[in-house]
Length: 294
View: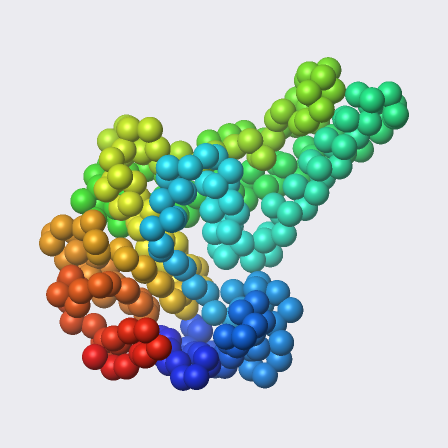
């Protein structure tokens, strides 16, 4: 359970994480939008707040997770991976650093500034960390897949599937294509090129899904992750849904309200209170310079 309240730029959060009470007092400064305090101490990085308060967000621009390129989907998977497996949250950054070093070594050899031997240590590191990252991503996606299918179906998107698309590259694989990598100056195998595959009824949603189906898929991803985190940690994350109702018909709005009822706190923004599928626990009216209880 989470209780959420605001006043004068201050956000107070309290409740229970599993069976342990917790509270957080977050202060935002309008004059310095990139600075905030948590329980009186300056936040050194956004990850501190993400650790204290698990928050999942849907906004219209999140459709890029389905409509955009593979890099956007890899970034989504890595954020989910960090929340589901906190001990492995640094894997994406560690792997990216090694790939950057290997690519730099490839370009030095290409420019006759170094020998091929300089590439070998980075090849080994790329294979080791790449295997660990691909396995962690696959585990995270497999955990999300069941809840994704269930949430999608409740929202009217049937036979929806979620799968990780890519296999790790071994040291031998990388060595076999070394000539090609030297020619191009970049590493051509590994998780930095993998993708997340979203389908419904056997159709790839990126290319063959309507905008409505793509929107539902992204919403289902958010709700699926919320359910997965609740099952794994015993604490439901805060879910923020911006303008989520505008393209949903009445039946899908009802399905969404039933998913809300499964637990946790959800904040929904809408331009019309009549669009809400059920009566909210609290309703706020937002106008320029004013927020008040409706």
